[in-house]
Amino acid sequence: MSTADVLVIGGGLHGLSSALHLARDGADVTVLEGEFVGRHASGASAAGVRTLGRDPREMPLALRSMEMWHQIGDLVSDDCGFHAHGQLRVFETEAQIAAETRRIAELEAHGHTNEQIIGQDTLRQLVPGINPKFIGAAYADRDGAADPHRTLVAFRAAAERAGVRIVEGAPVCRLSEQRGAWRVETAQGAFAAPTVINAAGAWGARVAAMTGESIPLSAKASMMMVTERLTQTIRPVVSIVGRSLSFKQSSQGTLVLGGGIQGRYDLDSGRTAMDFHALARGAAAAEELMPAVKGARIARCWSGIEGKTSDLLPVICPGKAAGIFHIFGFSGHGFQLVPAAGEAMAGMVTTGVVPEIFLPFNAERLTTKGAAA
Picture 1 (cartoon, helix red, strand yellow):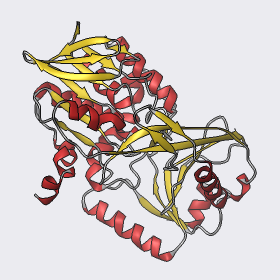
Picture 2 (cartoon, one colour; picture 1 turned 180 degrees about the horizontal axis):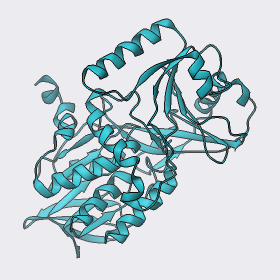
Picture 3 (cartoon, helix red, strand yellow; picture 1 turned 135 degrees about the vertical axis):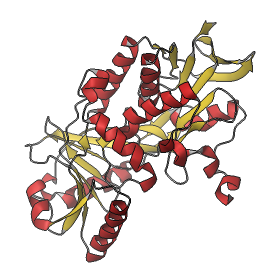
Picture 4 (tube, helix red, strand yellow; picture 1 turned 135 degrees about the horizontal axis):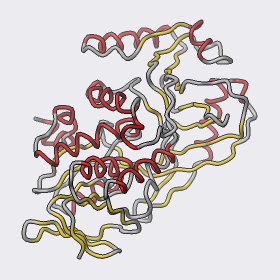
């Protein structure tokens, strides 16, 4: 049986980031991944790096993470393809302008100045060719996007350089507590450690249940589309208020379309299936946003399974059983939080103290008892 100081269940970006920060603090860490690193949510991400439109309870974590993204090479020795060309949420009605203005005013009242409202003239300068029906946008100029696969490679390589052992093809079959340590049985053998981080994504609730804890969690299978290469004209990431669309153009000229377009999934097999009707609706929304892209050919599409909570906030907290820590359920917007969430998780594991930026993410809030408290 292999032993470590910390076992991380789940080889997505949040598991890798937690492992990397712990290893740099001197811990002996092993990551156990059921399939291969980044197979699901991390590899199927639109890779938006945004503070724009965040739930206010996420803002402290998101702002710390944004600081780290702007220096991401210091953490993983690679820029992860990150470019801060800004992010926009465009709107088409006066009522939407009023709602967005109120939302941003509330953020500013709490000291957050990362967003502003821009008018149609500025919007057209930032996004040439945008449909003139869109009359303005909420804009965060330090936001941007990264390359999800380059980010996975960089975090994996940085973790391994720090001494992290990564075991793929190791789905967890059973957890049991034995003499002050957790024994984790997998398809690749048994592992033991006094501390286990549950970063199992859509399977996070199943792992928690193995330790005797019930955490409500559903799942989703967000789909992505990439087009053929087009002339480079768009720099910011663009979304539409009230629509499931994230629209960006990569440095190679391809359009990357995502933003919550949902496919089908099966948690038992880990398989996903495309919903081509939903993809067609996403493509139509992209054409509405940018009429000039109509007729662009879709080169490929894919999806991955991710955990989804009822309030769309993650679960990041100690488990009820000693030595267990949870970090899952990011509900489609966890990519930007990766650097700071891993940093704070390492601190929580090392000190046993829940950092203030994690307080909104306790698991009990999702239970009937927690909601009533």
